[in-house]
Image 1 (cartoon, chains in turn red, brown):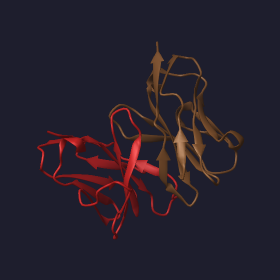
Image 2 (cartoon, each protein chain N blue to C red; image 1 turned 135 degrees about the vertical axis):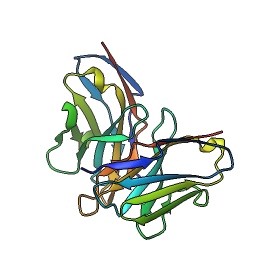
Image 3 (cartoon, each protein chain N blue to C red; image 1 turned 60 degrees about the vertical axis):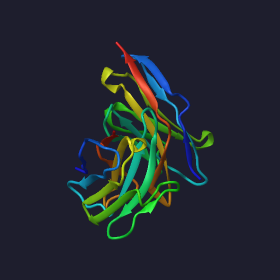
Length: 117
Length: 114
Protein backbone atom coordinates (compact mmCIF):
# COMPACT_ATOMS: atom_id res chain seq x y z
CA UNK A 1 0.00 0.00 0.00
CA UNK A 2 0.82 3.72 0.15
CA UNK A 3 1.89 4.09 -3.45
CA UNK A 4 2.50 7.48 -5.02
CA UNK A 5 2.81 7.92 -8.76
CA UNK A 6 4.07 10.79 -10.85
CA UNK A 7 3.35 11.60 -14.46
CA UNK A 8 5.20 12.06 -16.66
CA UNK A 9 8.35 10.31 -15.54
CA UNK A 10 10.38 12.53 -17.82
CA UNK A 11 9.69 15.45 -20.08
CA UNK A 12 11.63 17.59 -22.53
CA UNK A 13 10.26 20.97 -23.45
CA UNK A 14 11.29 24.16 -25.20
CA UNK A 15 12.23 27.25 -23.29
CA UNK A 16 9.21 29.45 -22.63
CA UNK A 17 6.64 26.68 -22.52
CA UNK A 18 4.80 25.39 -19.47
CA UNK A 19 4.96 21.89 -18.11
CA UNK A 20 2.49 20.19 -15.76
CA UNK A 21 3.56 17.36 -13.46
CA UNK A 22 0.98 15.21 -11.69
CA UNK A 23 1.37 13.52 -8.34
CA UNK A 24 -1.20 10.92 -7.36
CA UNK A 25 -1.73 8.86 -4.26
CA UNK A 26 -3.00 5.58 -5.67
CA UNK A 27 -4.37 3.73 -2.69
CA UNK A 28 -4.82 6.34 0.00
CA UNK A 29 -6.04 9.86 0.49
CA UNK A 30 -3.52 12.61 0.99
CA UNK A 31 -4.55 15.88 2.55
CA UNK A 32 -0.97 17.07 2.38
CA UNK A 33 1.58 16.61 -0.35
CA UNK A 34 5.06 18.03 -0.73
CA UNK A 35 7.02 19.05 -3.81
CA UNK A 36 10.79 18.75 -3.87
CA UNK A 37 13.47 19.61 -6.35
CA UNK A 38 16.69 17.67 -6.61
CA UNK A 39 19.77 18.68 -8.56
CA UNK A 40 22.27 16.03 -9.66
CA UNK A 41 24.22 14.56 -6.78
CA UNK A 42 22.46 16.84 -4.33
CA UNK A 43 19.84 16.57 -1.67
CA UNK A 44 16.13 17.19 -1.90
CA UNK A 45 15.10 20.78 -1.55
CA UNK A 46 11.56 21.37 -0.36
CA UNK A 47 9.75 23.75 -2.69
CA UNK A 48 6.25 23.84 -1.26
CA UNK A 49 3.64 22.17 0.87
CA UNK A 50 0.39 21.44 -0.91
CA UNK A 51 -2.82 21.15 1.09
CA UNK A 52 -6.03 19.89 -0.43
CA UNK A 53 -8.51 22.67 -1.01
CA UNK A 54 -6.23 25.51 -0.03
CA UNK A 55 -3.29 27.48 -1.34
CA UNK A 56 0.12 25.94 -1.26
CA UNK A 57 2.75 27.16 1.16
CA UNK A 58 6.01 27.96 -0.60
CA UNK A 59 9.48 27.83 0.89
CA UNK A 60 11.59 30.92 0.95
CA UNK A 61 13.12 31.67 -2.42
CA UNK A 62 10.64 29.63 -4.45
CA UNK A 63 8.64 31.71 -6.92
CA UNK A 64 4.98 30.85 -6.46
CA UNK A 65 4.03 32.42 -9.80
CA UNK A 66 6.53 30.26 -11.59
CA UNK A 67 5.80 27.00 -9.83
CA UNK A 68 2.02 26.76 -9.66
CA UNK A 69 0.65 24.10 -7.35
CA UNK A 70 -2.90 22.86 -7.33
CA UNK A 71 -4.23 20.24 -4.90
CA UNK A 72 -7.82 19.92 -6.05
CA UNK A 73 -8.56 16.48 -4.68
CA UNK A 74 -7.40 14.16 -1.93
CA UNK A 75 -5.46 12.05 -4.40
CA UNK A 76 -3.99 14.55 -6.84
CA UNK A 77 -1.61 17.46 -6.69
CA UNK A 78 -0.12 19.13 -9.74
CA UNK A 79 2.97 21.25 -10.20
CA UNK A 80 3.08 23.50 -13.26
CA UNK A 81 6.39 25.01 -14.23
CA UNK A 82 5.39 28.13 -16.13
CA UNK A 83 7.55 29.70 -18.83
CA UNK A 84 10.22 27.11 -18.21
CA UNK A 85 13.87 27.97 -18.77
CA UNK A 86 16.98 25.78 -18.89
CA UNK A 87 17.76 26.56 -15.25
CA UNK A 88 14.46 24.88 -14.30
CA UNK A 89 15.81 21.58 -15.57
CA UNK A 90 15.85 19.28 -12.58
CA UNK A 91 14.41 16.19 -10.95
CA UNK A 92 11.07 16.97 -9.31
CA UNK A 93 9.79 14.64 -6.62
CA UNK A 94 6.51 14.70 -4.76
CA UNK A 95 5.55 13.03 -1.52
CA UNK A 96 2.31 12.53 0.35
CA UNK A 97 1.13 12.12 3.91
CA UNK A 98 -1.58 9.51 4.27
CA UNK A 99 -4.71 11.01 5.83
CA UNK A 100 -5.78 9.11 8.90
CA UNK A 101 -2.45 7.35 9.29
CA UNK A 102 0.66 8.65 10.97
CA UNK A 103 1.35 12.15 9.84
CA UNK A 104 5.09 11.80 10.08
CA UNK A 105 5.80 9.39 7.26
CA UNK A 106 6.06 10.67 3.71
CA UNK A 107 5.46 8.38 0.76
CA UNK A 108 7.49 9.46 -2.21
CA UNK A 109 6.73 9.36 -5.88
CA UNK A 110 9.32 8.08 -8.37
CA UNK A 111 10.13 11.59 -9.59
CA UNK A 112 9.86 13.50 -12.86
CA UNK A 113 12.93 14.53 -14.77
CA UNK A 114 12.49 17.82 -16.58
CA UNK A 115 14.83 19.01 -19.30
CA UNK A 116 14.26 22.46 -20.73
CA UNK A 117 16.02 23.16 -24.01
CA UNK B 1 15.96 25.48 12.68
CA UNK B 2 16.60 21.82 12.07
CA UNK B 3 19.53 20.54 10.05
CA UNK B 4 21.14 17.29 9.05
CA UNK B 5 24.77 16.49 8.30
CA UNK B 6 25.95 13.39 6.52
CA UNK B 7 29.74 13.62 6.83
CA UNK B 8 30.55 11.00 4.22
CA UNK B 9 29.82 11.98 0.65
CA UNK B 10 30.89 8.65 -0.79
CA UNK B 11 31.57 5.27 0.81
CA UNK B 12 32.86 2.12 -0.86
CA UNK B 13 32.56 -1.27 0.79
CA UNK B 14 33.09 -4.82 -0.37
CA UNK B 15 30.13 -7.09 -0.78
CA UNK B 16 29.55 -8.99 2.44
CA UNK B 17 31.28 -6.38 4.57
CA UNK B 18 29.53 -4.39 7.25
CA UNK B 19 28.31 -0.85 6.64
CA UNK B 20 27.78 2.21 8.76
CA UNK B 21 26.52 5.51 7.35
CA UNK B 22 26.76 8.49 9.62
CA UNK B 23 24.10 11.09 10.29
CA UNK B 24 24.19 13.98 12.72
CA UNK B 25 21.25 16.24 13.30
CA UNK B 26 20.54 19.56 14.93
CA UNK B 27 17.15 20.15 16.48
CA UNK B 28 16.02 21.76 19.71
CA UNK B 29 13.56 19.12 20.80
CA UNK B 30 13.09 15.41 20.26
CA UNK B 31 13.46 14.87 16.55
CA UNK B 32 11.70 12.56 14.18
CA UNK B 33 14.45 10.81 12.22
CA UNK B 34 14.36 8.95 8.94
CA UNK B 35 16.64 7.08 6.59
CA UNK B 36 15.74 6.81 2.92
CA UNK B 37 17.38 5.06 -0.02
CA UNK B 38 17.29 6.35 -3.57
CA UNK B 39 18.28 4.26 -6.56
CA UNK B 40 19.43 6.08 -9.71
CA UNK B 41 16.62 8.09 -11.27
CA UNK B 42 14.14 6.93 -8.67
CA UNK B 43 12.19 8.46 -5.83
CA UNK B 44 12.94 7.77 -2.20
CA UNK B 45 12.11 4.63 -0.28
CA UNK B 46 11.80 4.72 3.48
CA UNK B 47 14.23 2.33 5.17
CA UNK B 48 13.35 3.09 8.77
CA UNK B 49 12.23 5.83 11.12
CA UNK B 50 12.55 6.79 14.75
CA UNK B 51 9.97 8.75 16.70
CA UNK B 52 10.34 7.50 20.26
CA UNK B 53 10.90 4.37 22.33
CA UNK B 54 13.63 1.86 21.66
CA UNK B 55 16.63 3.73 20.32
CA UNK B 56 17.66 0.83 18.08
CA UNK B 57 15.33 0.76 15.11
CA UNK B 58 14.98 -2.08 12.66
CA UNK B 59 14.12 -1.35 9.08
CA UNK B 60 13.65 -3.04 5.77
CA UNK B 61 16.33 -4.81 3.75
CA UNK B 62 18.27 -5.74 6.88
CA UNK B 63 19.09 -2.17 7.89
CA UNK B 64 19.04 -0.80 11.40
CA UNK B 65 19.81 2.56 12.96
CA UNK B 66 20.58 3.73 16.46
CA UNK B 67 19.43 7.03 17.92
CA UNK B 68 22.00 8.53 20.28
CA UNK B 69 20.70 11.71 21.82
CA UNK B 70 23.99 12.55 23.56
CA UNK B 71 25.78 12.51 20.21
CA UNK B 72 22.91 13.91 18.13
CA UNK B 73 23.40 10.99 15.81
CA UNK B 74 21.29 8.48 13.96
CA UNK B 75 23.72 6.20 12.15
CA UNK B 76 22.54 3.56 9.72
CA UNK B 77 24.07 0.08 9.81
CA UNK B 78 23.93 -3.18 7.96
CA UNK B 79 25.95 -6.24 8.98
CA UNK B 80 26.48 -7.59 5.48
CA UNK B 81 26.13 -5.47 2.36
CA UNK B 82 24.73 -6.83 -0.89
CA UNK B 83 25.57 -5.51 -4.36
CA UNK B 84 21.96 -4.35 -4.68
CA UNK B 85 22.47 -1.95 -1.76
CA UNK B 86 24.50 0.36 -3.98
CA UNK B 87 22.48 3.59 -4.01
CA UNK B 88 22.19 7.05 -2.49
CA UNK B 89 21.19 7.20 1.16
CA UNK B 90 19.56 10.19 2.77
CA UNK B 91 19.07 10.94 6.43
CA UNK B 92 16.25 13.32 7.31
CA UNK B 93 14.93 15.05 10.41
CA UNK B 94 11.39 16.22 10.99
CA UNK B 95 10.09 18.56 13.63
CA UNK B 96 8.01 16.88 16.30
CA UNK B 97 5.30 19.42 15.60
CA UNK B 98 5.38 18.95 11.84
CA UNK B 99 7.34 15.82 11.14
CA UNK B 100 5.86 15.45 7.71
CA UNK B 101 7.99 18.35 6.61
CA UNK B 102 11.51 17.05 6.77
CA UNK B 103 14.97 18.45 6.24
CA UNK B 104 17.27 16.16 4.31
CA UNK B 105 21.01 15.66 4.50
CA UNK B 106 23.12 15.90 1.37
CA UNK B 107 23.22 12.14 1.02
CA UNK B 108 25.89 9.45 0.99
CA UNK B 109 26.61 7.49 -2.15
CA UNK B 110 27.30 3.83 -1.46
CA UNK B 111 29.37 1.81 -3.89
CA UNK B 112 29.64 -1.93 -3.38
CA UNK B 113 32.70 -3.74 -4.70
CA UNK B 114 32.32 -7.34 -5.81
